[in-house]
Length: 385
Image (cartoon, rainbow, N blue to C red; front, side, top):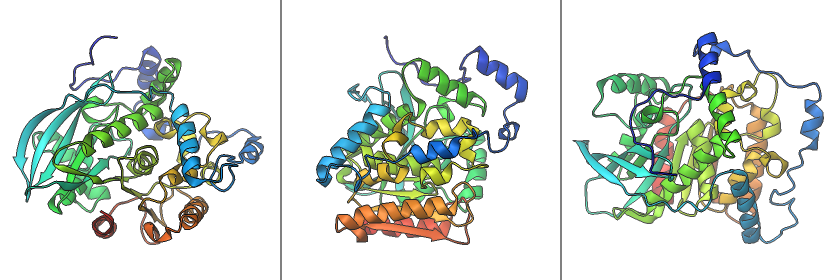
């Protein structure tokens, strides 16, 4: 297939159809009709979903055996090569010093197709250190990816954009820098379409997903596979204690955090902020999922015939997991969060490990990861790592 595509800024092209869409409607999410369209028989389709592979419903009664079966089913439906063994071949470039930590850019091969650039922060001291795989959100903002969570040090244009994002969702903090200051190695990489690997525009997401399906692959599956590989790369660094690697993310990054914990034994704990729900409760008129576009980054075809969303996250049990939700978050209906939390609690309780599961709804907050929530996550990480 030839060597990996060279890294660098590029205009994201997904074909003539995508170009026509962009030319015809612009790049604003508002161009999409609100809520999308559900067929009249959608309630019957919902009733057909029984999630037969869920723990407690599955005929497999041994939990370790169930984890293997459930993980294998998810792996099958990623539609991407599970035997990826391309050498990472990391290239490190020194950056500026932070407050008690050093900054580096790192470029790695997560798959055989492309080199990926990320930010790597390392605390001062001898190590080895606990580490965090930090996973960025979606937000329909593609000019920055890793910079949403790690302060850029070599690009003033991106710094201005990143500061605006941090002010909007993180109380002006850069979560990665906070974690490094508190003694964690931090790795944050661009997902396909963001930062150095984009930028996409809103309408191109569906065209990109469609093209990958035509090629026998999957946008969500590629994202999951890359996160698995990133976890293994981080755990393998000499500066990292491989037994103390956590995944942390907000919004789509929260989805990615519990997903990689379910699919990777390199992750010892995970914190997911503002992404957990029951599937049936999420699929209601007006929900953002029905619009298409951003949903394709988190859509594994056929998976819901076997497992609900919290069932997939439960593959990570009984490892420590944290889920936070904002009570004013309109993206995730309260019923969906309640159902998901109930399923998660039942699984961890069945393992005698309910104290390892932190579930919390903040009634006064919306779709944010503010300083109060961050501080609780940082304290939790200290306690479990």
